[in-house]
View 1 (cartoon, one colour):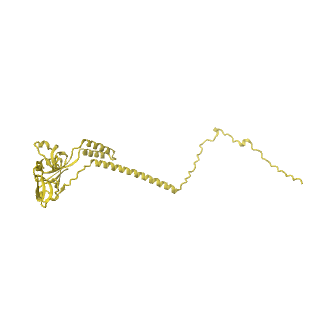
View 2 (cartoon, rainbow, N blue to C red; view 1 turned 135 degrees about the vertical axis):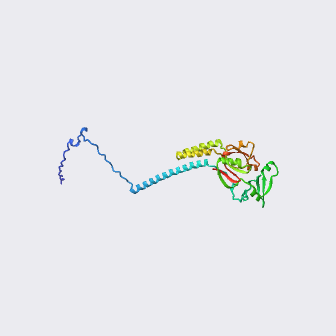
View 3 (cartoon, rainbow, N blue to C red; view 1 turned 30 degrees about the horizontal axis):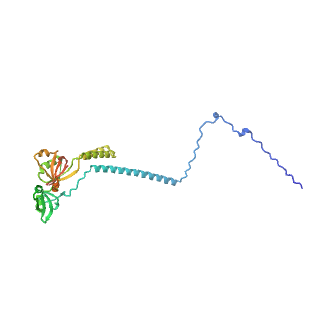
Length: 306
């Protein structure tokens, strides 16, 4: 049988649109609507949760506090450092005096034998030194320094009771008196006489040491975090300290001479015999500047400069 013919269906295709509908008309620049274009603000999307933000803020606050504390600690260390340097610079290193002691003794006694030590200098009025405090139960072995210097026999036994009642020592005192520089110089010149005494004084400063002290002290003061008024006070202390040398303690006697009035005045030098050096057989003559004396002890009284 011959195949059946399939009936074709006609499909109608619409016509293409006009060309003017596909091309947008060009609007002249002058005919464009005027006005600023609105800026589209895109919302910020925060991916962190509120808890994470709070943790970050807390960490930042802790870091800031730590930084402030570190700065404060550094400032405190620097402040302590310059203060320590300055205090050490102006501080006097007073030597230890193991023989110096205050005593409480009966009337008519001149020293306390219980506190007399080997090396203690006595005055009877002979100038003697204790060699052996307990030579026997009732005597001490002593030496007359003047006789010993002359090369003759100068050692003998002296009873403990005689030492207490007849011997002065410059190391014992039962009262302290505050005096000014003029009074101190007068007592040294006019009242000590031939008695054994002890003077505490400052040596004249070394020029190089004084210059170094002023230079270093000025550097510390200029960098100190204090007011100008405080710096002025510090400069004054530095100047006063620079005028004084090493602190000294010396026991002995004044050396008298014909030109005493010229040698020993309120602003002059005093010839002094260092009894401790004399006992060791060393060169004992020294010069002491009267204006540098800060303390004088003799006959149970210590006179201190105000």
